[in-house]
Image (cartoon, rainbow, N blue to C red; front, side):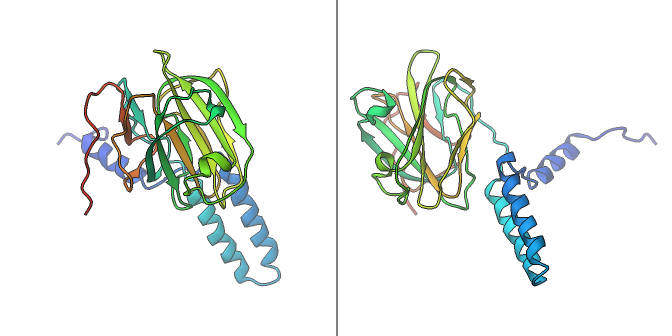
Length: 244
């Protein structure tokens, strides 16, 4: 009887499913995990159960900094969600002057990231980082409409190969106090590439090109690097939704 020498297609699929539960932790999180465990070790000399509390805290930090792989659509014209979270607003607005996008109104898609969501942000399109800027501000609830104008934030403007620009704005929230960028001006990005993270609750806005609309609706959950926010090559009308 001939024995199988290697794994077959079914084995590979099972391995892929099992590995999907083992989500890697981004390197930005290991320092905080180490601090939690070190503090717990020291405090356990005072009271033993504090060690187990630190282990739980470290587990929570690891969960926050998880960095799961994503399967990103790459067709030309697609604008992909830069972060995980609830679509909090889809609104036509004049972009802030700091973005350098001009006065013409654009559709802004706002995604609110709770402390339970993945906080790694990704490039919504492929292109070059034309401009990147950090804007100091305050720390109000990122779900509020004016958070895009008053909160601390970092703007990344990506110029696609056809010259069209799309802006991604990472906005710090009530709890979030640090935006960590992974890219800078002049970098060439692939759609879905990691561009930064926001610590502990936040929001990310995407400004579409003029005269284009979104294909997502308020209340929808977006998956960073996977959910299509807009299709710049489509002539489809504004998508209607049903709630229930």
